Amino acid sequence: MIYYTLLPQEKIKALRKEYHIRLFITIMFFISCILLFGVFLLIPSYISTYNKEGRALDSVKEIEKGRAERGADEIEKELKSDNIRLQSVLDLSKYSINNSELIQNIISNRSNNILIYSFSLNKEEGTSTPTEIIIQGRSSTREALIDFKEGLESEPSITKVELPISDLAKSKNITFSMRLESLKRDENIKK
Image 1 (cartoon, rainbow, N blue to C red):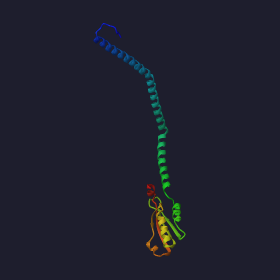
Image 2 (image 1 turned 180 degrees about the vertical axis):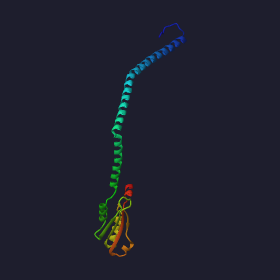
Image 3 (image 1 turned 45 degrees about the vertical axis):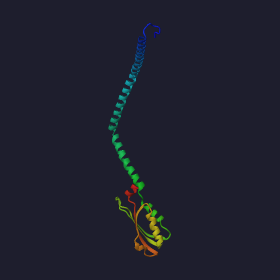
Image 4 (image 1 turned 120 degrees about the vertical axis):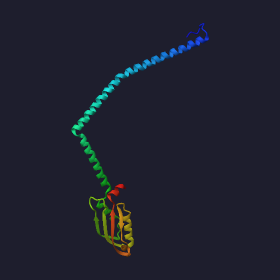
């Protein structure tokens, strides 16, 4: 910048302003040239990536075509349906209770004062009706019979316990007949 001139002060200010504008324009020109050069450097990598994407899409189409020709899609559908069936069987077997477990649960609630003479299980296969169990036996006291009934009612695998009132009429040496229903398979799954 020229500091020693004979120009008036307004002209010097105008010259400084023009100098700063030209300097700014020159700097912006060089920055835009650098950006443009960078864009040109990215073009080959863009083309390379675009070609690789096209080849990858073509290979995916060939693989899908080969799968369809080999029948892999049908096999995959069958495997999925078999997996669903297997899972439902595993879920049912996990939640269902078998007869030996049911008998064991009933006997574990029995005290020494209870003698069981008869044990009957009735269940219709293929239906969702609960298993009906009839227990006949003898109790030495009324309290032992009531405790046995309450123990069975607290058992999670048994939904219903029926003991006729007439069986509780005596206080000692009671012959009883008790009707139980075990848990339905559908009810067990909900729990």
